[in-house]
Every structure is written in C-alpha cells, then in structure tokens.
Length: 161
Image (cartoon, rainbow, N blue to C red; front, side, top):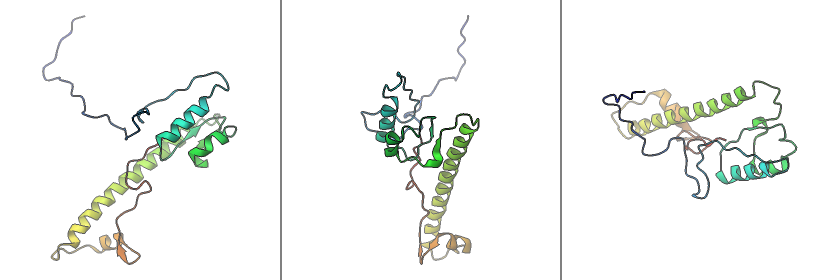
C-alpha cells in the first residue's frame, strides 16, 4: 500500500477536551463510558452508584431491571422516578432518554439565548436615547423588578449521566 500525503492536511488537535467538566483529580473525567463487570453480588451497583454520587451529576437516567431491588443503594443519587426505566421489554426506552436529554439541551440553549437578550436589554436600559421594545420590557419584568433569565442548573452546562 502506498501512502500519499495530501498538501494542507495537518491535523489540529484541540487544546482541551470537549464535553468535560471539572472533576476531582482522583476521579475519572466525566465524559466517558464506564463498564462494571463482576459476578453476581460482586459490588457492581455499589461501585457505580458511589462513583456517580462522587461525580456530582445534575441528572441521572437509569436503565436497569434491578433498580427496585437496589433502591437502598440508588436512593442517595436522588434519581427522579421518571428517569428510572426497569422495563427492558419496552424497545423505546433509549428513545425516551434521548428525548429528555434533547429537552435538557433545548432548555439550556433557550437560557443562553435569553441571557444574551438580557445583556442586550441592560445595554439599552443604560442608554437613554434607545427605545426599548415593549416585549423586551415585559420579558424581563418580574415581581416589580427587572430580572435575568433563570436556569435550573444555575446557568452551567448540564452534567447528565
């Protein structure tokens, strides 16, 4: 096989990894796939649930036929009941999770858009010659004061598991 180097095809590696968030230096990076393999009663659920707890995820989706029997182990994770899927016969389980993850993404993108609009609004508010649209005034006027948009994860990108 003959290898031909094409001109102008230098690979540029990003300076930092994408899709990660800060984790304790003793923990693995959050962006990854973790697999636990052991015999029955070998501590898989205990190990993975403790790792998930230490990683401080914002929302956890659990697909497991043994979720109910592992309730004591999983309770400290605070997983919403609507995010637990035990029926593996339901072929749409993955689609349900994907829909919820996409909704989280959409909510975050909406928040970022509204935050930009709020910053633009503040600039307009500080310029006495600018006419501010009524819709913008109403958008940020809450309980007698102008308020920035709110996000359920306080404006940070979601950490989902």
